[in-house]
Image (cartoon, rainbow, N blue to C red):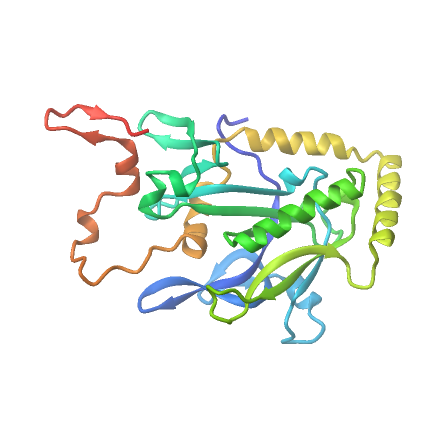
Length: 301
């Protein structure tokens, strides 16, 4: 197996609550008030809808605000990986990923493990572009029990809510997270920062019409049936954990370009800034080295 290549869950499609639109010659993210399930293929109009998107809508054109799912793993930290993340907006390559204590950062000397004081206390993050970023893998339907759909978000409300739900449900079920029949549900709230305009975030709940007790009973039955059939969930979690650990970064540069467009867009230029893009130092340049007049290179930590 290739060294340094993270092995991530097979992805059949994407789940999003927004899109990337063209505006004033720039590709910018735009929030939405419903889920959209797409393939991993982009056309001229954006990501191509996945057939399951229409299947889940009650009628053609109806808003999709709940998606029935199961989770691929029992370990919440395998289902959803959240970190402070920074990408090179020019290349899409991951630059720095941290958890508030330590980070892995791409430097001229290779990937280094450094202290991570979180964006509020990090000199590199002060330049902009570092924020919480999460990926959550879920299963939709039973056609492919190893295939997943990925939900990505930089929304604090979604990250905090989903992380709490995952850990609570794991505890309540006795560790049978992967056997629970659940659903992703879109919720809205208003904050002072939104000036009364609703903002939408993602929650994870029992399915509509099912109580928590019924959901737990179904999970126990499914887990027993799987074990009887030779399904080893513990081994699957172990393989996933090892796969994630193989690489310093989860996203490749190829995936990073789309991630940057949707979640880490370039801030609008200031009118007084007349410097051309070609004359600006890239983020990788800043990270890699600082040359002095003698030509010696000093690494940035």
